[in-house]
Amino acid sequence: MCGIVGVTGVGDALPYLLQGLQKLEYRGYDSAGVYLTDASGKNALIKEKGRVAKLAEKAKANGFAGTAGIAHTRWATHGNVTVENAHPQKSSDDRFFLVHNGVIENYQELTETYLQRVHLVSETDTEVAVQLVDKFSKEGMATADAFRKMISLLDGNSAYGFLLVDHEDPETLYVAKKKSPLLVGVSDHGNAVTSDAAAMIDLTKDFIELRDGDMAIVKPSSVTIYDAAGEQVNREPFTLEIDPEDTDKGAYPYYMLKEIDEQAVVARNIAGHYYDEDGNLQGIPCAVTDAIEEADRLYIVAAGTSYHAGLVGKRYFEQWAKIPTEVHIASEFAYDQPMLSEKPFFIFLSQSGETADSREVLDNVKKQGFPALTLANVMNSTLTREADFALPVLAGPEIAVASTKAYTAQVLVQAILAAALGNPGFDLKAELAKVAVEIQAITDEKETFKKIAEDALVGQHSAFYIGRGLDAAVALEAALKLKEISYIQTEGFAAGELKHGTISLIEDKTPVFALLTQSKTAGLLRGEVAQVAARGANTIVFASENLAKEGDAFVLPQVNELLMPLLAVIPAQLIAYYATLARGLDVDRPRNLAKSVTVQ
Ligand code: F6R
Image 1 (cartoon, rainbow, N blue to C red):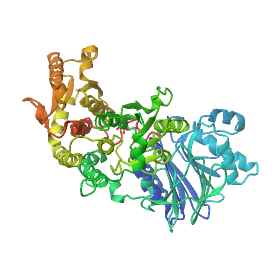
Image 2: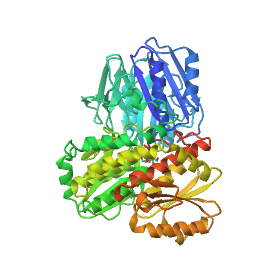
Image 3: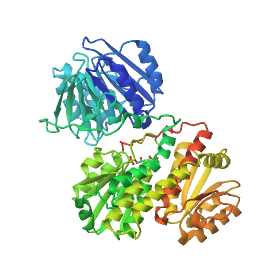
Image 4: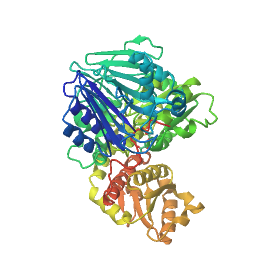
């Protein structure tokens, strides 16, 4: 979704802002803009539809770099994709400039009540916010008070991350946030504000996480923070532990391919983090296992790919830890809470830790007094901070919109947590070492999957992934990967359900990918493959070594059956990647999608 960066006192502001925007590009956007200024008040506002590269060209041609500035990537919600609607938005007299992430629910009422006489040039809720600051300032309020008053008028459901500059005090950044992530980056050569720490790592690795309701005043060499009650507070910075190189593509054409390839290393890193050299589990505090052991049921709550990872994790918690487990889609659970057990324990799964749907559920759950654990890739994120416990998923920065390594990492960490709560009945650490080797072996077969993708999918408008048991769970993720980036409508299906309706969609050459790794149902699945083949489908079977037959498209190396999802998903990721390339689309930035969905 939208991204925010701002800097002050950094010498030459433009390169930091442009690099920051480039690092935010992966989150999804459709226009971008930058406002630059310096202590003398000289300034420039530049906005563009489309790519940050286009904005960068225009900004460099302008020639003014500034010592402070704010910048934004916009993902349209209120108002079309136009230059007028891009941020920064400004007040009518060019005094205030504002970038905003989130949605102001009552912006129309505010316009009617306060801005009848103001000519609004955009269709955005953000312009309403900046015009309100201007109005209150004209009525005699100091800028910080006008900013605070504007915020106090926002509907309680509104989400915001605001970054404001006042032309009359150009090197001061006014910051506020609620339900939308915002961090202050601190350094001895200037300060920064950003919605994603990775966007500012060229300036600093030290960040202060703002909390909901906070307001901050950021100057070149000072940061002052006020909490929701208006009290000045001291918040300690944390140091971000990422290498700037982790967020670069290196020699890869797309982040997605780099991240698919990183999965073997991620698997090893996770095992290295959660096991000591003697094979003993570590890194899961007793407080976490004790709290889960008191529960009579686990509720895994997540969205999209993370939800699919939860469907696999359920099996580990039930089979190894013997705890009944339900998996729920966050956006559904949030407004239709199912009947809960007497002692529920919640597990939130999230790559970003910022997904608004999951946050809504966590809020509700906390209000009801239930314990919660977040497994997230981005630690220090809202879901990790607001849950009682948090464990890292350790996939490393995931930039491509389509999630790959975060899925395998989430499955792995759930397996380890379930092993800490019970007994898998085999040496999980040794088996995970094998999984890492076999992930590597599959990712080395890129040419095979490129050919399968090109042969089966070019010219097709629909496809299916089918499986039974854990393979049905992986089929959902496989289908999501293919459809979200290639735009080929793909259904992931529990194979036994085909005959209850969906089989009528099978036409001549319809690609049907079958995942066949579970011995209990292998015979039935073979039958279902034969049924769709008899109706003209182009069947492509990925079977595990123990179950493979002649004619299968690819034989997956054999590991413990319950861990096969970690291998079965890899061909699907590569097929999605190559099918998308073959269709000439941007793999990392599918249309209409954002990496981290911070609005409900
Ligand atoms: C798909 C994808 C999304 C996310 C979903 C939840 O490739 O990435 O479906 O899984 O938006 O996001 P997180 O895991 O950040 O909560």
